[in-house]
Length: 353
Image (cartoon, rainbow, N blue to C red):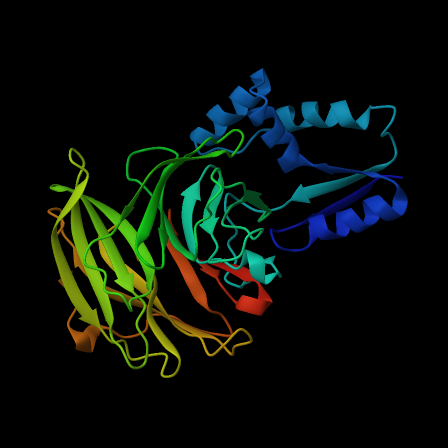
């Protein structure tokens, strides 16, 4: 007996397949896993798949069918297969929240594009807990191993360095940053160097970071989350690649109107294609909520890297979400991608077109 499970990301295909494999003594077959295996093993088919994906196209049926034939006609697995089929375009046209993981350890505090999915960070502080993970197109999350004995503490943001493939900056809440590379085949992390962002005061708690490739060089934009008692400080600082120093650091103060209670003004930062700087403000009353999130446009960055904040009267919520604590946002193609750190309720994702 063969079974087929199909549905969109987050529907629970993988979870149900695990139970059935154990119950029926069967074998799980995922078309997505088969394609990734070919890429990771650097086969001829894998090279074709990469070329197709780089052109923004879908892998054709002929390739998928060839891979399926190997498994279907395996005498050890014949008639004991559970197929997991994915139904959606490159990213889901879904306006609803989808579950990524229901454990607190995998709540998400920062996101960046990586391979065909996302690189995310977690604000964990204990040994044995995840720090960095990869989320594929099926919303399957894979924990990446940190290469050093000393682990990062309270990672709050991740951003790809503009125009450098597979190189990222990870930021802790105290402003310490890790420049890393990730091998896309085996997902191994290599730490290139560490540094600290300038002008951070002792009581600040940074949660947002993004980078803008300006005409004067890379502009780091980062922000203290603030609270009901303390407005948030947004920083912009240029980075000198030659001597690896920061210069011309500026500060801007924001106290956003919503949420009203347990407020964090800057839970993450992201730039859209027009240079508009977005943030998410959250309400965080504790590990069990209730959570609230609002999105805002704070201002705009011009080609020279000069940030012009919007007038306070124009800074009003663009979206509002009850029951979700968004701590990670980014723009990808025509989508605004939101991910959550819902504490004891795990992590969710939403795509807004």
